[in-house]
Length: 456
Ligand code: GUN
Ligand code: FE
Image (cartoon, rainbow, N blue to C red; front, side, top):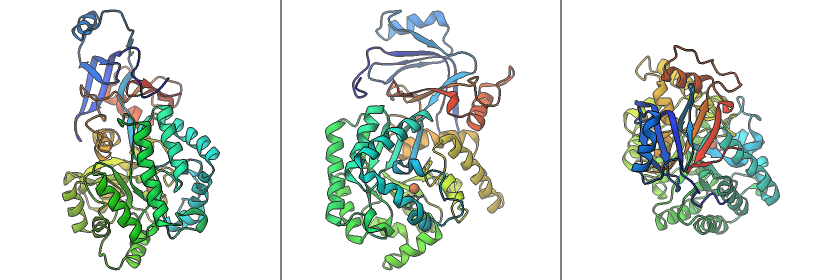
């Protein structure tokens, strides 16, 4: 069946529903009736509904009673929004775990990463590996991902195809990189690099014209990988397509910042650099944001750029890098979580969330208490609604507001696995906390994107 088509029947649930209303506010709806229309949009969300009221609600929405089944969630089961991974390198799927303990960022790129990404020159390999990774991310509850592809145009179009085939929502970028990488893994001409990005934009508008699931994203790897003319050309594409999202790595490591300064002595900061090339705006996703100068924070605040916080890769490379997330949140800057898989060894958003808690504890210590650690509600927000805001998709997903599209996880806490057992006296928030802190993909028994069940 075509994941872009509407479904035969609406979907309906009765049970516990949990989502974020804001950074600090988790809403728990018990005995909730949730109705998803055939187009995958949430049509009804009502708490404290007794089973014998359901037929009335259904007929209020114009359906005959008993035309579709109502899925009843038992005690210890609940729905929550799907995870939004704001920073993910699809071609690093098969290198996760390799060579990141203490290696510097630039050594890791040269010693491990480029050789892995280079394999995606072969479309047969690309199709097999991307089918595996998109299925793997869906299995772990990532309903939306912002992807860096490899530098290959064809492989990146294949990634777009596979997101649609498997029904994942995604931003898909061809990685632009024409220097500081071996000839066997870089764009050999700036013209061709830009042409591949334009081709991807056209290709996606042909296969998903309404952007039901996927959108192209302008993806300069980082300034170290791009000549000024390439960045300039990407800025021109951004100007021609003012709604296109943009992503890059930003102030990730001291070594990277120093080298960027050497390559671009005319710019004092990375914010100045990317702004000059027209790559900073309210749909730019900046990964990492560890070492920003005060005026850079002001720039991204003013321009409303979003931040992809990737605490796993930040703490496993050479430097233990602690992003000042509390400060960004205080200033109202959009923040989401990224697995940064494979720079992050795990592609689990639950792992990314737990590492965000750990890193925020480190920040609490480093600031002598000035920056309090993230709360559970904040971590859950960053993994869902916060990520949707960063990806420019919060009018469509991120929580269960009526009218949004149903991207959701069905969690079963008693599934065989190692999750902290749920006990009689546990509140719903205890159950959520146990899942977030000790659950895994075995507890994510179903994954929905636009109302379609997509976990295989
Ligand atoms: N900077 C440039 N490329 C990469 C990458 O693939 N991963 C991470 N974490 N940082 C980068
Ligand atoms: Fe990355």
